[in-house]
Image (cartoon, rainbow, N blue to C red; front, side):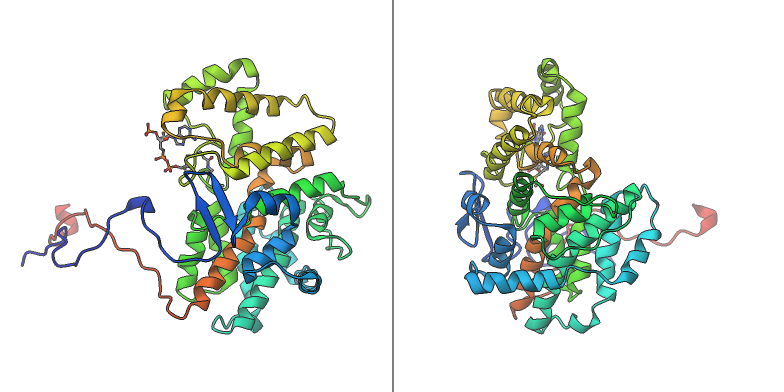
Length: 400
Ligand code: ACO
């Protein structure tokens, strides 16, 4: 009657790789990262080139379809996405169910998941056209929902999307316009946000994307899968890092306190937020673009003497010349500078991770589509090493 609960002999052989340091969960043709060299490519194109020469919708098309669009395809794609930017008015009522001070990420998990209740016409995931229209709807509607989450939070009326605007302009418009006050987006800030969106659009099998794939592997609909990705992204070790990085800079407060703060990191009292990465053991290439964008934005806004930027640069300098960080290959990641840019654009801190979710939606849905489109895919089902109690008999209440 002895049950071998901890041995592997009866269970066959499998790999024990907690946190997946060395396990590829899938094959993919979307994003390539060389973490040691600090390189990132979407569909073969270097991220720096896309950030400089492309725009977000074009990058979305590339991630979803595999190739850059030609002029006609680009125009058509823009029209399709623009066509889908509105959300059903019934969705607006969902917001009232949340506390006013709810974190917008909590609201986003709910309302993006709720989209699945509105689009029964496109939930046959075995049909490529259904998958495509779901992808378009997500890409178009998530910014609208994100802006609504913000408006609800600050108590202003929702603004309907304006289709004369570009994707990024429209998002800024829905965030910052009010019925009393029109909003004219500043082209340089639009470009900066466009870059943030491009840099965050995909990053292969990170925690949230793996979550989307795992949820999707069961055949769950894409709206529910993306909601699961938003939930996974929320954590401070992942998408919450830019919010945490900005809070950290504010807590440090002054350049004179950098050395003391770094000592606290080395004493393992806390981590340097916006630093370190599971895959990059070199400079995160997105951080370089972000630092440059940060500088441009602050210059445009005549905030060159921005205290947080100076602090961030000093922190980066100090860490990169310290053996503790060098030995552990800890470099700034994309989120080290993005918070400063978002703050300068006027985005409130509690919306930072929402912006990340908005930008990553295309990555999630492209990865989901790639997985479902592969007829060989199976439900994801990790194994475990059991280390609990061995077999024992039920103990009646009076004997416990
Ligand atoms: N500050 C200080 N030390 C760190 C940091 C950090 N940010 N990150 C890792 N370390 C140290 C660890 O203490 C550990 O040191 P030890 O060997 O002495 O114990 C070593 O580096 C390895 O750390 P791990 O936790 O094993 O690395 P892992 O790959 O699991 O973690 C992670 C990656 C979660 C991103 C981590 O670097 C971290 O917590 N960073 C801060 C949060 C952050 O910026 N997240 C954003 C990631 S990027 C993104 O989501 C877009």
